[in-house]
Length: 171
Image (cartoon, rainbow, N blue to C red; front, side, top):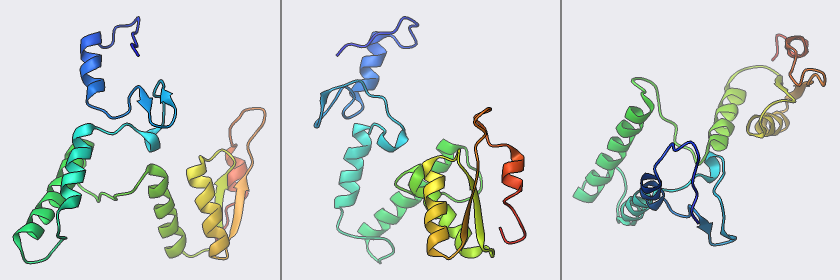
């Protein structure tokens, strides 16, 4: 499949070189040829990353044992963390590994709901499912009331007063 653009963001040669570095750009094993258009949860995988993952995951040791293989694993993990911080421009803070942004949000909401006192959770009808679903899930599982601020059908937004009327000292 040959995809060209009128705006010439990439030359056809550069676009071909970039596409060659990824798996399943123009086809997938389930549907055949396709145009790739997906959110990050289904993001393309770099061939080199997959090769490196396969190599590192096949090593027969784990973190913090007293042998050279374990030292390699520890060094690789620490370098990976530093590389991610560099990539993100993060000079401080923590990196939380997760399978996806949805998974990370689920874990963060779990942590907040589990450790902050209160008996209700407030969210909105406009929330992404990655927020809406875990707020409902954790409110049910932790015996908290789930409050959902209504969307204005006229403006397609959630008026602040719709949120404020649901918040109280126990939120």
